[in-house]
Amino acid sequence: MLGVIVSCIGRTSETYISSHIANLSPAGTAVCSLSPVENPAWVPEWPVLRLYHSDVWPLQALRRVAGAASRESLLRIDLSRLAFWLATNRIDVVLCEYLQVAVSVADVCRRMRIPLVAHAHGYDVAGQSRDAVWGARYRAVLPQIDAVVVVSRAMKAQVMEFGVPADRIHVIPCGTDVRAESNAQRHGKRDVFKIVAVGRLIPKKGPIFLLEAFRRVRQACPRAELFLVGQGPLMEAVSQFVRATELEDCVHLLGELPNASVPAPGRR
Image (cartoon, rainbow, N blue to C red):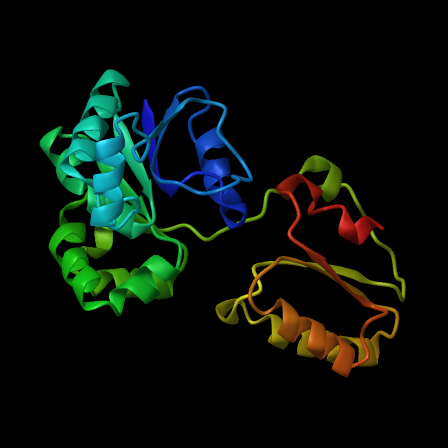
């Protein structure tokens, strides 16, 4: 049985985690979520252990005071419930989404002799490594886990700086699930191009750079269109750029969309 442990269930921007849960071990996966998220965009088909849930109000109050309703900290009782979940579901191997989640549960897995694989996704390497407390925790714990999956060779080099041996780090680039119906589409020579871009509108995603690149594309292909799917704090800046560059007729800001709706914009 595969046990997938996540920081939280249902973030719109983390549908790749939903895909891991559904496809890595179909009908052979159990899920544990360490912290809550409001209005989840997706929920696994299988029951989820939510460590932050409790019918005992004093425990909920203690968790709030301790700041433990998050992936950064787990109460001792939460770790006990996690150990019970691992045992009752007969988990053979644990997959943790994000390095800090792996660090938080590594001791429980080690004591129960359950192999632990951590999947790094980006900010958990670059962002947390700049934090002195998390950097120290990474260096103390990560070299002891069984394997780390990263999405690039550059990220592998960063993880090695925490003391993880190179032979325990596996580079698996992120890919796109290309369905047969999409693969069957063939486009001949034409002068109309529809581009779909999906991502949160935050600085590290560079939406303004995307728009500037598209502006240059329009100079060579005046009938190109851009469908931008995503929401975030840079939405106003994105809107201002579109107006300032007079791209309102060809840049479509669609906001946040359900994952199943993402392929549709470019077919309009």
